[in-house]
Image 1 (cartoon, rainbow, N blue to C red):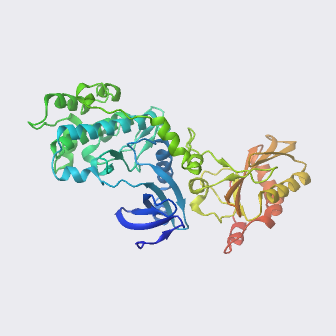
Image 2 (image 1 turned 90 degrees about the vertical axis):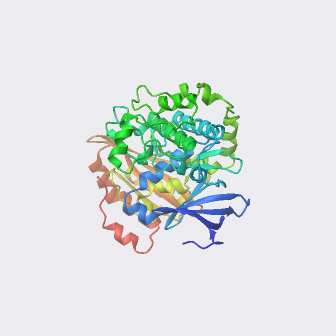
Image 3 (image 1 turned 180 degrees about the vertical axis):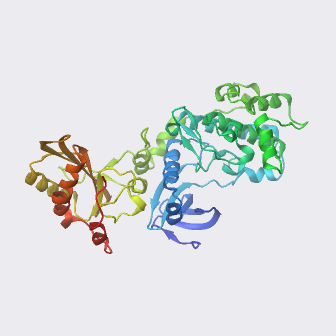
Length: 453
């Protein structure tokens, strides 16, 4: 366990442990520079790698970048050390909503306020193509002003991860809160499934217990599939009617978020989220490097922040998320790594400046009669000879990890893979050998490693 008072990456002073799971621990911490209280989520790289959770971590980061909303816990920045990944997040002082429910049912007005904020947050997430998939009081936090904050996007899914049928197919979540279509394993609409979970949360807030609880899991699933539940006598008729529309086992007839937000019971005392766009802009302005690292395209790839280093070349700046996305096994010292998807590409790190890297690539191009094009951290070597599949073209993208360390990703842009392999083995690799940064015998090990085909 990390000790209280430990200074983390020269940025945060760690406080008490707030909670922990199998792969992560969450600490209260203080930003040394600003004095701001934050929550630091520490993820053990070795454990994550061992069970293949890299994609889940990347997805969680990408999701939290997409959903900046007053009722969603904010991600400030992501950092990485040799053994851990760190999320610096908004610290929500009030703790879990679950702790309030444990003490007993909430008054209707209080439950309605939390429910309104939950729906506002989830509807916003859905508008950004994000489905939470694990909504429950334990994942809903309350700040010191009594406002709800949705947290823990570890099981979330993105719109683009749907299959060809337009549905999600991964069965996940907490059994008592999952929608019947998720249990059925026939595919489900993430937005409709989230709304069901919101309905279960509302029932729990008002009743103090679960609508479908049963010690026998199969019996509980049977009740969920049939939407079989009873409302306590103290539930108003309006809320009973609304719950039956939300907890409709048929997702096709279940109430939608738009219809729900027009419901008279829901609208009572509603305070709409104000100035959401300006708040988003303010957040982005306060963390420019995060804006660059986490703005995701439809494919979920990070946009890259450009840093002007030389007048001839502008290497791309990398931060922790880019490193996680690009580096197999989070190993920056890896020389010409072999990727699992078998693309014709390779990477190496170097302590040489961008100008030297470009100069070396230009020498190679001159010897082999390649045309050189340079733009925004990308050097393209365009061959003049016609090969089996047209002219060979190679991209070399330069990333700035730190001012004194660069990573270069080399990949075939066009042409025949076998011709690229031959060029790589006989010309490119030997010519780059002098500028490659080798550490702890990595170079010797990697020289024996074949190029991906």
